[in-house]
Image 1 (tube, one colour):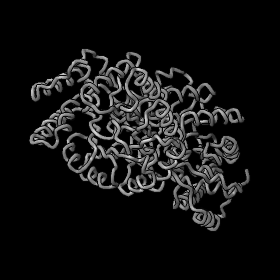
Image 2 (tube, helix red, strand yellow; image 1 turned 90 degrees about the vertical axis):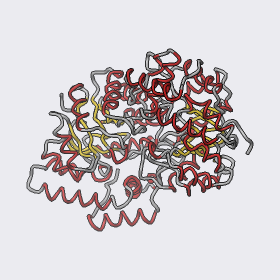
Image 3 (tube, chains in turn yellow, purple; image 1 turned 30 degrees about the horizontal axis):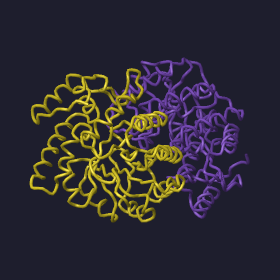
Image 4 (cartoon, rainbow over the protein chains, first blue to last red; image 1 turned 30 degrees about the vertical axis):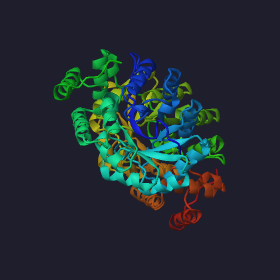
Length: 305
Length: 305
């Protein structure tokens, strides 16, 4: 397995901006992606939970991905969320990503039906890989049981990695539980395991993990990247404490709305704060209070795009 | 509100057959729909949980619905599952149904994100209704928390029924909890509440509910319909006991696979038993044992299509 921009490092799961008409705003999206790469991200995860991806239609996701690539972001720097409830749509989304040159996908399990076991999830995942039938494909399993409810057990991860060693190359663990992240790192040699939360970044790197794919990477990638680059140095614990503390302040409010409010504030672009239902934007006063807390406690500021 | 075939009665949430190629099989689907109407169903719910609808792509669902209408099933007899995770796709699915003359939809809440409250679900539901903007629309809310996890609270149902009295006309309650069904019946005057399980049919009708939309309607509609037609007669309790007992025997095995195995067996069409991953078909021996139990205990038999 050759090293790719999506193999290791700090990856932001991109927020998805919406225009006045409620449609995804490709211009703001591309600009945000470029800014994130400048801010320190090794790569970008598009269409994850933070990106409200499951609130987007398949056609909307396709158009946004095309806009990123046409807008000049290297396909090698993208990890594309391809997992839907439906096998056929997941296959189609994967092929669409590959057609654009995006070889890395972040794959949710089918998450509607809850009474499914490892055997069924193995059948699903292997059928997706076989139907796509493209040697270029790198699958990162997306394990986020607090939201998807359905997840990948350690045994299933082992079995998939053994059956498809050149395809199932990694995993994002968004359990919020360090023991789970550690078990996934240990599940298969060479598996690139990303913690879904930078609070575990230093521990993840010490344990041989790949890095983090974290929502707050949308506003704090440079500091998270700084720890990633210096994790073996004397001040690594202090760097970890700083980004942990900042995250804890951010997540005192609903994560996606406060992140969007932060971007909107520092870009002077109130429209960036829009959410798509069932999510609602923060009240303006609450957003302002959250931003003031970050500035007072950490001298936080988003650099201009 | 005029009475329609979808307003009250016994409705089967249609199973979805797949062909050798793994694609939904429109011919078997249409034939099954016609047979169900002959077997006693007042109407058909297409693209519900039992129909593996969330394992189908949007394009697959559209083609199947077109096949039903082109195949001669009256659009007025269809209640179309239109609820996806994405507002825009739900709007598009609703418009597609209306374009085909299907006015009744069975609407799941957006079910990926779990940290949503009634305010967000109200915003979502009302935005769907307003974007569709078609006076013909009849929305049946689909409350199935054991699977979707996200559900409609009684307070939210009241609020939606009050805000959109000519659109939000009913609800299917698949909690499996009679107290919930009863609370939904009492939530708003004139709301057509279907129990998601014929075990509650007699109680539902006594309480002023509309009937049942039940998975086992795929194989036992005539007996369920018989109770519906005779619920005020002396033998209603005995009829209820019979269909309850039959259901309990069926659900000793995973519901969708055993229902498909039953159809496959009596039609002499083994392909009918196919499931789409993440679901798996029953082992042949297990299916045969389940069918033998039904025959021995109840003289069960599926009439020829």
